[in-house]
Length: 238
Image (cartoon, rainbow, N blue to C red; front, side, top):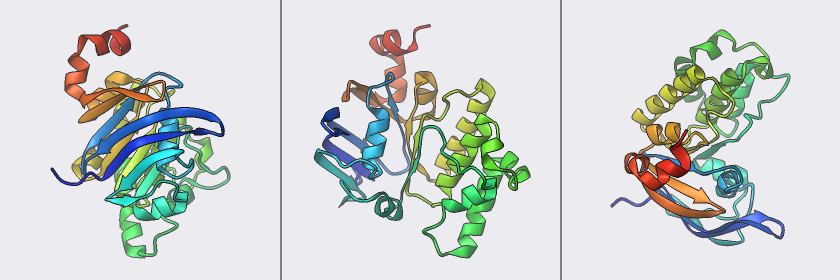
C-alpha cells in the first residue's frame, strides 16, 4: 500500500490541562475522502485544529507525506499543502468575495496558476462569480460556506480539511456543496471531512472514523459502517 498522505499515531491533545483527544490514530490515503463523525463534543474540531497547527499535541505523532508536522505553526502546515476550512466559515468582514478567496493564495507566487484556480472555484460555485464584488459576510450561510471552501482550494492544498460542511444549511445547499466536493475529489483532491450529518458523511466519503469522547471507536469503509446495525442505531435512527 502507498504511504499515507496523513498519518496520526497516538495523538493526545486539548486545551491547557483539559485533554480532549486520547491517543488517536488516523490515516488518510491520497485521493480519498475520509469522514470524521460523532456527536458534539467528541473531539472532531480539536483533532482538525491539532493537525493544522492551531493546537500543539501533548503526545503522539502527525506525519504529512512522511514528514513530521506535530507542533508546527499553522503557516508551515499550510505551506506544506494542508488547508483547514474552519467551522463557522470565518470570512473577513469588509472584504469582497474575491478578496476572501484570494487570501487563500497569500503564500503563493504563481500568478497565472492562481488565476486558473480562481476560475476553477468560480466554475464549482457559479454564484460566487456573480457576487465576487459583494462583502462576503453579507452572503447567505450556504454561499459563505462555498466561499470558505473556495478559499481553502485557493491554497492549492494536497489535503483539504473541512469542519462541519453542512451545519445550519438547507438540504438543497448541502446537495450543491456535496456535488462540488465530489467534483474536487474526482479531480484528485484528498479531503478530510468533519460532518455531524452522519448520512451525508457516509454518502460522500470512502472511509470513515467514528469518534467518541476523544477516541476512535470504529473505522472502516463508509458503506459498510452505514449498514452496521449498531452504527445505524446510534447515529442514523430517526
